[in-house]
Length: 162
Image 1 (cartoon, rainbow, N blue to C red):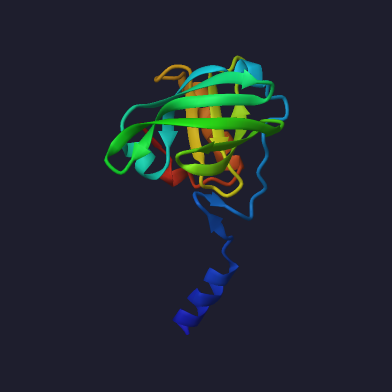
Image 2: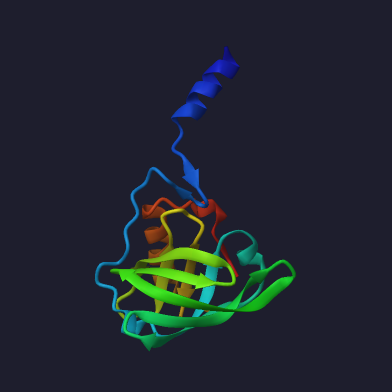
């Protein structure tokens, strides 16, 4: 009887995609200004292997209207490694990125008004991180980015600092 009850409860649980509850709506920042996103961003919190990989950063450089070249470090099987990707703006606060990691959607879920800290994610949940202009962002801005990730269905227990 207990096993049957647990099975029924498991069937009621919301589906999880990546690090995100797929049953929760997700939204990108409608007022996002891509020209202000240009320059270096430090990954300050992330999920999984990325969180234990060491300092990671990425630089966004414009190459054409709505297109960026993104270079930086990501987590590989033997630690951090360099990457290059092309990012194409596909909607307000929404990018499609293509690089050595393949193709993925990256959405700006939240960014503070002065473009110092941002929460990035994707509908699939395979992208989830907080980036900042400084490797040690202000605590209140980091808390706001975490709230945005939680609001968009991310499992906050898996998000860890670098």
